[in-house]
Length: 426
Image (tube, rainbow, N blue to C red; front, side, top):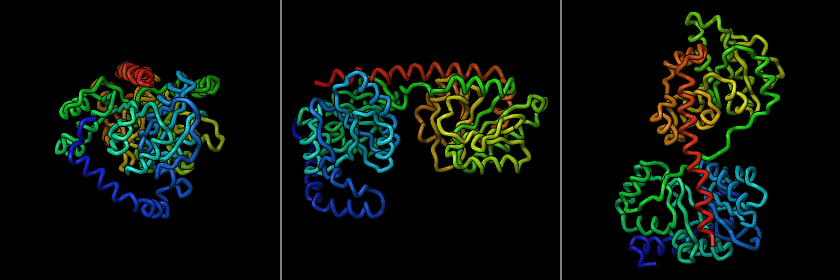
């Protein structure tokens, strides 16, 4: 590798001098619940399990969002190369717990080492990966540059730069080019991200947002048929993955929509799927307090003539997206959540709208809005959209079709990533 920029040399020296203090810092974080005390050695580059023989592909997702986005890719690599050990690293306890539940049997989770010269050297000496995959904007200089110096092939997927990151890297352009230039493959999250990378002198080799690429949500066919029989011809409005504060808003807007003649005669069914099923009883109480007839799945109650169904069970959104004429995606009407996955209804041909607070899925929503496949709706305007769902307005199937087409194209890009990575493995 050519001579490092002075800023990266200074970073290496500074992190090397600070590294003896890292165990104390990790102990302190563990006492505050931010580190797993039983696995602090992994943060220092000391492996917690044996290395299997054969090639290792290493994938890093810093926190929950990045870790979740890696799961379809991990499954694709495992199917294509059963001989390949998949080492998946993350930096947070929450991401580690999620990956512990969701990784396929032959994948290994480890905490990522802190970005000190000694910790990263121990990590790379032990695991000897053939391939390193990073997601979004996770650029740790010691880890990346040592991996590159050892001949590890590197890929940056769903690459993006926030406004702050772009400003900072523009100030240190030589360092940015050295780090980003260490990657053999860079795939930008979207066209905007590709433009930002180009402004730093890095040309992306294409687009791939790893939030895409997942399979459609499953549904039990017998359960789906039973629900269709029970509901009959009634239009279904779905409030998906709601959080505290959203249920009351949606119930109020539903009641407002029901006052629009002649909608009350349609006997629509509002289905609320709380993000956390343990909230089911509280949501049912809200509906009852509004004078609405309510049934709750968690209490074993039939739907019957209920106006509101609280579906407080895990793993059933695939059923309801297949039944709804309109879905409202929760986590987007109150602060502090950042929205939930809009790709799930799109894959299943369900028309959907969302509140305006969708920071966690900003790029996906931007593309869907550009494709005229959804809208972000303020609370006060939600009743008109609910009325469209009750009426089964012609606009909704057209929106759903545009959403399905948009997501299918982006899913194809994401699913092709595995093939591009396999080419890099020696």
